[in-house]
Image: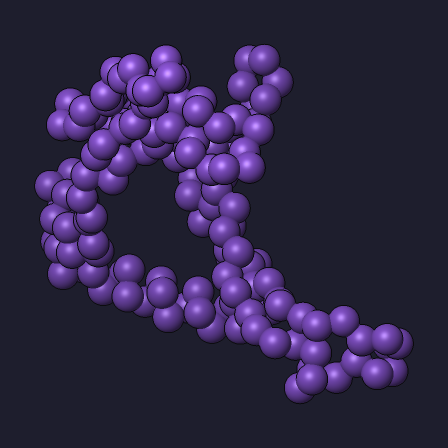
Length: 155
C-alpha cells in the first residue's frame, strides 16, 4: 500500500516559488465506519455489529468528555481536545463568554514518536511509502512566442 501523489505546479502570481513543482497527495476513495468494520471483522474475532456498537459508543463518550473539558487520548491514534475561537476584550473584566467566545472546534493531534535522527513523526504514517499516480499527464514545456516556456499539470 502506498500514498498516491501527483505533481502540481505553483501558479500563484505573487509566490516566491512560482513555477516550481510539488507532490500533492491524491485520495483515491473514502472509507466509512461500516467499511472499516468490515475490514476489522475479517482481522479479529468480533462481529461487524459489535465493532459498530463500540464505535458508536466511543463517539458518544468522546463527545461527552470533550464537552466536560477533558482531553481524550486514544493510544496509537492521537488526542482530541476542544479549542475556542474568541474575539479580544480590552480588559479581563470586559470579557464575557456571550460576546467574546465566537465558536469552538475539535483539535486533533496524532500520536507521534521520535525517529533515529531525533525528529518527531506521526505513528499513523510510520512505514508509509509513496508512488506517483499513473492516470494524469504532466505536459512538457512548450515553446511560447518570444521563446518563453509554459508548463502545466492536468489531473
